Image (cartoon, rainbow, N blue to C red; front, side, top):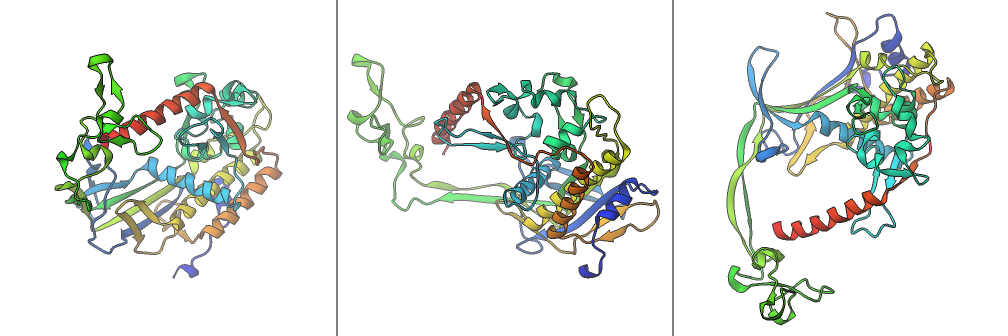
Length: 416
């Protein structure tokens, strides 16, 4: 039972990273089943052309299995970061967060985008194209420091965006372009379904008001203060002038479906899979963390104890992210909720040929572990941005978002 496994402690992480055995990784592998039960259908993510990511994998017993990707490495990383953001917003953990606040710019949809949500983290173009005290962030006194970051000088990232050191970052949009700093992922996680069989999905909609296809045409209403369409040509928006003045049909052809009215005939398409089981595999690479150096002064050599304290804090942050995400559950998308079919635990890969030690870790334990590791890192002198850094979007970025929201509104009307 889980309560008999030893709890993963800070001392165990310290010994794993810089003890005499210099462990290779923390690993967690968990079998999952659909929340609806064994054999229930789940829906993987779709890629270009509406296809699933399928491949044949070799199993430990030497047999092959048709597999499907249920959650990619990139998607898992995003879930981990959002779990950290939730914990940060709840005040459970301390974390450096950079936020771009679009409020006050008269947008259709107000945005607040954090460095935990931006796809490229601190190197994301949204953060690059925002302002700190009226100055472009990457040209500001804070942002310029990112230009000199590399694996032997990672202190600035620890201070402003430690998640970039855990989940990886490439500063390809910064001043150095493709020569910008590049950090590989220290934690990799994915969910794969085994023995996948693809099924079909059905779709239809019955219009309760009985609105028929030929009841139109609908026109774009000239008065936009109320209903956006009209059946009366005299109340329609017009195009052209004089005798060529013609009422503007709603959407492409003025059909009721352009206003989301009418039936959708039943259809059948490829969709969903059944599985024998799914597996979530999460690996935290300790050599990846050991490679990082954290000099406290610019141009100086790093101190071994400072390096070790930073590496331990990052390992604890990775463990915290993965554990909190797991406790949030596996509701990956519509019709794809999974549930562990076995106990979850962490293994420490230490010595080849020796059974790995197994440890339990709850979300509460992981939060305490990270807090303890962080306090030790700060006590030794490592800088850590505890207050949210709020940036303002540049006028160019605001206008680009405004135009995109207008296009989304129009395209949504056309495709719905």
